[in-house]
Image 1 (spheres, rainbow, N blue to C red):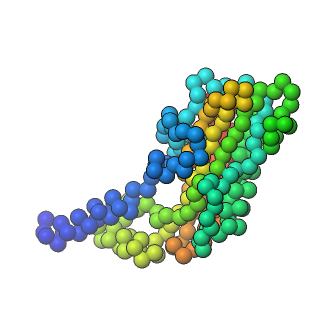
Image 2 (cartoon, rainbow, N blue to C red):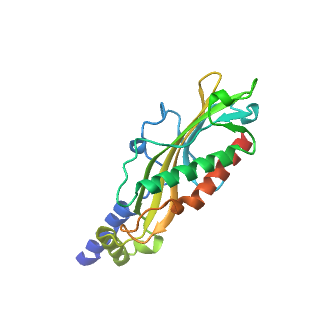
Image 3 (cartoon, one colour):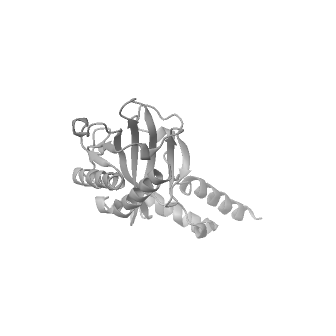
Length: 226
């Protein structure tokens, strides 16, 4: 292999490692601190083939409960709107995610907004959930971009801000047995929204509409499977 070819391959390999490694799940350094602890979380695959970090208590039986206390998804920590992700987007995404979670539980449970509304003699779960991050990042490299010259072009696009990006949102949730106060399930999910043309395109709530519907289906499947 000539010196020039080795140079090109070296740059291509560097591109793959720097641009192509888009994690499908949240990494520990991306955990927000919303959950009391993150112990036991393991990477799992949902019914819609999405990756999620999740823990379910041994012996947890969703069918043993009849009521879920859930008000809305929080924005945690306090939202800091940017020019690209403004306050209206954050509030709209908060409302959409809240509806998604209610829709997941509504077929099987009575969903109330506070503990005072819990029916007498009901076995109750308390759900706490938060959106901890909304942004967009460069797409991972496609297989055809690993060709050396194509890899160089892709990296150049990323540096100059012209590469396609993917809207991303992180959601953390804790499901607690109201009687014991102990968690029965917890989850950190990296939600992938629509593809954006470049780093200048604003992120809007509708970018996550399809992904949140998938999250609803995954939650229902989990509740029915346990």
